[in-house]
Every structure is written in structure tokens, then in C-alpha cells.
Image (tube, rainbow, N blue to C red):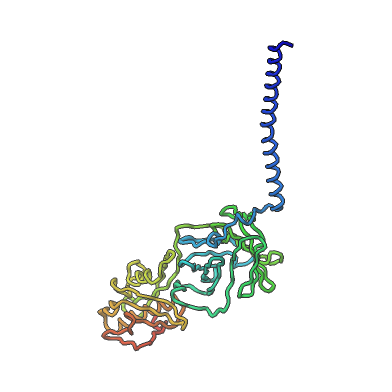
Length: 371
């Protein structure tokens, strides 16, 4: 072989080697990618054998599961019992509490939820409550010594806790599919047991409670399912107002409705009703310059209401002034379902040219002056 032919042969062999090496280099990453994908799949199946996502994907923020809503009414459709259908409206919110009213066709129940970093507690529960006071501010108590822990972190399947009330709760499912008229949710499932009763609750992120099932394994199962979310709405509180008759010799009744948004104190709209601004009263009990400074039901069962000093400027005879005061007492006492009202003026006993109340003296609701 000539020297020139030998050089050509060596060049061909070198080029072939380079091509083989290049093929080998491009094929290796493909094998590595396949192996990596398979490893990921195997890891996924080993760490999560169910359809639920790992608990690390679930929010640990209590406000995501029991959100503080405002000006929004939740409507629940029920089956199995009369009280299974109800509405929920947020009356007052603070930095760490939310006060709700739960209304059925027969009664209103007020609840207060307290939020901590890792818990939501139901610390106040009062039935037959048809008035609106900010319980956190007024300090009204119900005499209950215990409370329920509604939810507790970590939010993961298997986590359980015992409440001071004696109930035992456990997160029995995560990413559970729940269908409701308002939409389909991926919820956490909380099973709560107390004595012989079992309640299963489903909380969806950024919505809250979407379904409740009581005693699911019995013949008396009761279900409540979220059916409507009504935003930008007000709570409506019916009210019977008492006003003077045309002859100013007795009181007559009239119907009114207070429409209150979240964090609206009832005293402001009640003032507008009593001074005739809303048109619910023919003969107003207050003049337009009178204000209610505060109003609340005390733990003594007495309604405490304080007026601005203008209330004493009625410019009426003693008989009419007495009836006007009685109309106010009957209206406020009826709202609170209380028998007595402690009426003060700028925190002092009521005092005018005709009527003088002593320190701590209350006025009683009196139906005898009503036609």
C-alpha cells in the first residue's frame, strides 16, 4: 500500500470512530431520562398509594379552611330533619374572631369562632338570639364551660384532637370530592364523635364548610349541603316598633326590618327607625338629632342603652313624654326579648323636667299601654 493510500485509510477509520462516539453520546442521555422518569413514577407510587395528594400540598392556614367572610350569606339545603336547612351570616369580624348567626325556619343561633395559629375554636354558642350585639365587645356569656375545636393543624390525614367539650375529631380524608349546587370541591373530611353521635364535616379551601353529614351510618342520617353563596347582601332582622297612636293616648305596633351588613351595629339603624328616617313610624319616638351611644344585653338580662343628651329635649307634656319613653323601652326590650331596659343619658340616669330616674333604675316593658 502506498503512503497516500495509507493516510486515506487512517482518515476514514478516524472519522468512523468519531461518528460512533457521537452516536453513543447522544443515546446515553435518552436512557438516563427514561430511567429518571421511571424513578419519579416509582417514588410517587411508593409515597402515595391513594388518590390523595401529599399532605404538604395542603394549606396549613386556618383562614383558608374557615375563612372570615363579610357581607356574604351561605345557604345550606338540608335533608333528614327540619333544622338541616339553614343560613349563615357573618355579623362581626375582628383580627382573631368571627361572629356568625345560623338561622333555621324556627330559631337563630349565634356563634363566635376564635382563631389561633393552629386552631379554630367555637368559643360562644347561644340559641334563640334575635338581636345583634358584638359579643366580643359586650362580654355576654352563655355559661358554657367548654368549647369545640373545629379544626386543628397539621392539616393531614390521620391527625386527631380532643376538644374540651369531650368531642374527638380526626381528619379522615384530604382532597375528597364533594359535589354541591355551588360547585364541586376538593375538601378535607373531618369526622367528629361525641358520645354515640358522629358528624362528618367537609371544608373546602377559601370557601369553608360545604357539607355536613350527621350519623352517616344510621337510619336517621341528616345532611346539610351548601346550595348558595350570596355575596354583597345584608342580614335582615325583623323588628316590632311601638309608636304613639293618633290621639297620643296609647301605643300601637308597626313592623320594621333592620338591614345590617357585617360589622354594622344595630343601634345606628335602630336610631334611624325610631326618628322616622326610614318611614317605618308615623309618629317617631326620637327627634333626628338624638343618637344611641351604646346598646347591649348584659349578663344581668337587662338591656343597657345610652342616649345622647338631646333625648331630654322632647318638648312634650309629662304624659306624652312618658309614652314616648315607653315606646322606646317596648321596642328595644322586644328586640332583645328582655323585660327590663336601663336607659341612661350620657351614662347618667335619665332626667328631664318631667321624669327623673334614679341610679340603676330600670324601665319595664309594658304591654298594658298598647292598643
